Length: 268
Image 1: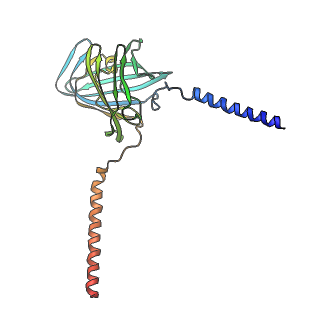
Image 2: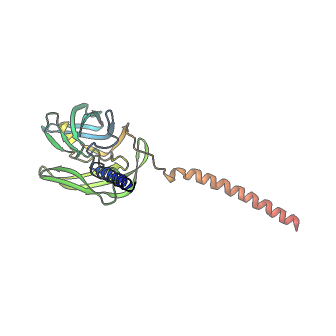
Image 3: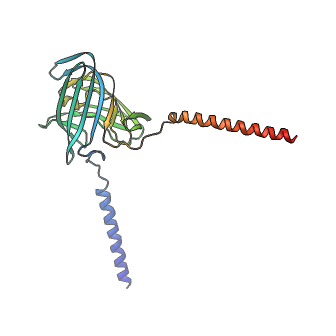
């Protein structure tokens, strides 16, 4: 019996170690499946004002007045580590024109490719979610050019189509194709999705054939079917209610004190 118990013990111990080792090896590999929220049909739409557009062939469109621009991306297919996205940009107002195309995004490093496989650059439509303060994120990485940024100003909050959300900011400086560029963006904290101020020189616009898109003011997320997570309450929104409650409480307290004084006066 003693040998049987020892044999059983060592068998169970070996099985436990095997399972633990397997989990350690396979369960903690870096994910290349992309963001958890990315699925077929996921989309985001942005809006901004513009008074010009410069195409890759150096054609320039100039508007007499500020033009309303809407652009969006939508995931139409996911195949392994690659996502195929539909891209559309519409200028309406001072200039009326549309740009439509499709592209591939490598989910492991956000590199953008045309449909024929040509590498265009790195997109910053989204970044890794839930970053820690001073984490470093890659904004552009196509040899020999590389731009990165530390996570800045956390926590911040920004208004989105789904309410007030916690966000983080990035700001990177460097050179892309022998040109000095600045990449700035504000991103949803829980998903990493861009919510405001689209970085310039994003590879997505290059696939649309646009070199400069003439943002006037800020660009902001105007619509999405991606769940950005629970909204953050703004205490200032409750200020009128707090003032009202405080006013009512003051009146009631004043009446109670007045009655008490009357009782004391009568008793005396």
